Image (cartoon, rainbow, N blue to C red; front, side, top):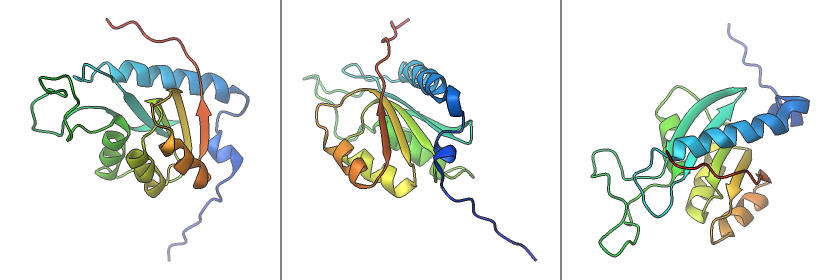
Amino acid sequence: MYVLILKPMTENHLHPYKEKQASFDRKYLQMAQIWAQNSYCKRRKVGALIVKEKMIISDGYNGTPAGFENICEDENNVTKPYVLHAEANAITKVAKSNNSSQGATLYVTTSPCMECSKLIIQSGIKRIVFCNKYHNEDGLELLRRADIEILHLEIEPLHEQ
């Protein structure tokens, strides 16, 4: 016989590092900045990490779908409509794995748009940490309505290598 024990979502679950949480939030966000450098997009490079129980369970950066050319902008420097956002890439990547994003924290270099916010809610992510605001804050408002914890951290931008 198997017994499934579910841990309640507690404040400690969202803040596993306790008094060191702020330091780890900053470090994971810096790692997301580094991961953003993998993007082929020229206008904006965005990186995302999904962290659960002190482990990185997924990562993503903005770019074209697998198998497409790695060109994000058209000849007028407009982002192509099929470019995926970093959050969407990280969420779909974790969906293909044996991991669950239920109760996880998403570290992303730019605050989520409305479409990514819907994915975040549906994926069970409970906390968002970001450093740059997206030009439209409707996504953040939706996350607030869903009682997802949001933290805006200002950190130094990385200088691309």
